[in-house]
Image 1 (cartoon, helix red, strand yellow):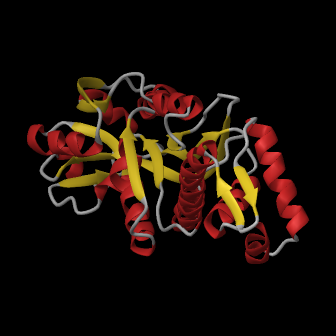
Image 2: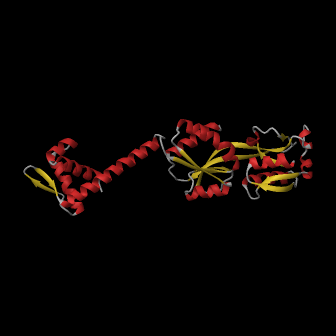
Length: 291
């Protein structure tokens, strides 16, 4: 229903006279009378009784007045809500990512964003890249930070950053004491690894196979903090993102001759989706931090 008709009717109902209502809303009396007639025709009832001293509401007119006030008020509230989201004074960002993204990439970006827009809320999910991609396609998440490649044609993919994967060992490990380690030396070691099937695990295993190395995986974990803690306590080796090595005092990076492992991270969104103002602004902030 046209809100203009409802607002015109409410102006007449509140003033009790078509002439006065027409002056208030800035149209001619015949134009206002026509609007009232259109509303009555649309509803199929008579809303006003015209008399010498103005107009009176019929019983149906009183009913329509009550409901119309609620409709107009709700519409005004909706517009204010939308406007506040556009001003980034409200709204939420639904985003997901893998362990590296959730632990080491998104926190800094979220902190910077919320400093400027404290009323924007974040709903975050940690899962593997394939699960995050599925959630974005299904509409459960607006954004995802995933490991490339992503082959789903229903996604828009925006490259974000390159993540270096490094070998780490406890400070007292024999390999940590060497200035340089050969790839072949890894075959004799025990490793804590990421879960089998994860995007990062596939990249690491692929690079090691290319180098002709078959490592001994004794444990699989999901998160970098858990892997680093296990390296620290058990003395096993691991490959992790260099992003996770900050503030690690008992674990060191070990350089391996001829081995360079990298992965590309990207921001994904459902193709054709109109992102919320908050999600659009956060994507720009995230990209600006990783140029």
